[in-house]
Amino acid sequence: MTDTTDQDIPTEPEAADSTVMLLGAGELSRELALAFQGLGADVIAVDRYADAPAHGVADRSIVAQMNDADALTALIEKEAPRYIVAEAGLIAADALIAVAERGDVEVFPTPRSTRLSLDREGLRRLAADELGLPTAPFWFAGSVEELTAVAQHAGFPLLVKPVSAVSGEGESVLLRDEDVEPAWQRAVVAGRIPHNRVMAETVVDVDFEVTLLTVRTTGPTGPTVHFCEPIGHRQVDGGALECWQPQPMPSAALDVAKSIAARIVNSLGGRGVFGVELLVRGDEVYFDSVWPRLHDRGLVTLRSQRLSAFELHARAILGLPVDTIMISPAAAEVSYAGAESTTRAGADPQAVLADALTVAESDVRLFNRPDDGETPRRVGVAIATAADPIVARDRARRVTAALRGLW
Image (cartoon, rainbow, N blue to C red; front, side, top):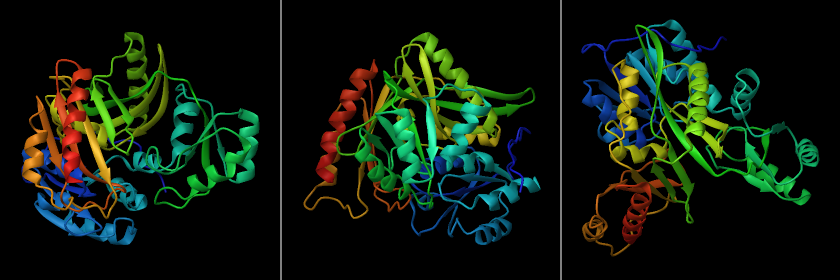
């Protein structure tokens, strides 16, 4: 079967033909559904469980097994959407490829992008071998013995990652030979897709990691890419994700980052927002990964940009003009909890919320609907703006500290 690698024919939305089927109805899809509806589209939200977050706002909600190719194909045939937007990780890619090849439904991300986002080996070989993008030295191994041989060749420290898992899941840093087998076991059981290969990567001494949200659009003159201001991020003790925009970067490094992002995004094709993950050391920039769909790091744009990442994604997919204007530095802190987590007994949500919002220029999102899309699940996000990102980060941390009274 041949992958559909690009869809560069510009499409103007029509009022009678702007039905969007979201495959995946979690919290991020909820924001995306609202963005599509604000542009006049009808939204069908699909997920494998009932009462998913986006089900609460969509025009129609459907429960279906999205990894079952036959069931997904039948659903698409029945609903006949104009656009399909895959927002979940585990979807029957073959079904999407077949639909995209017919030409009557546009699929985003492109099936090739969807497949590569679940295949770290294929994505890294595309970036390094085909496109010549700078990366950290890497190897792939299919057994403990092969990983041991890689470690002996490459030396320590060595970062081991699953070939298919979300960023950070199942990763280990090897410091000695005794770490190899535990790292192998941790990597091969990570994620939702069985696999028996891992990626080993030299640990590069970098100044920071950055996400460059890159918006790909198409028009009469062909594809165009637009860049948001870079987003810095780090995992906080306790599992929270802190992100801020802009992440200060040397101008030379930012130029290289934009070049890398444009090349990988244009290779993947399609329209929408791509999260390009980069490692920065001085003026040097290394490609790490790319996500052809929305990510938690984009939540900071709800307050930092004129158009959030969700609005940009919807506009690009519908073939509408976009801009990536940042209106204020901002920071966000996303809090997570286990699936069994509930609101703390005795907590007064209104009082906690009032306390949190006393922080200047702050905002929150509380995720109270069940979300089985990720483990651990999101329970809320604190967002704050300020004249510079350092102050914004401090404000977001204070909001999060107050919200912990709920969890």
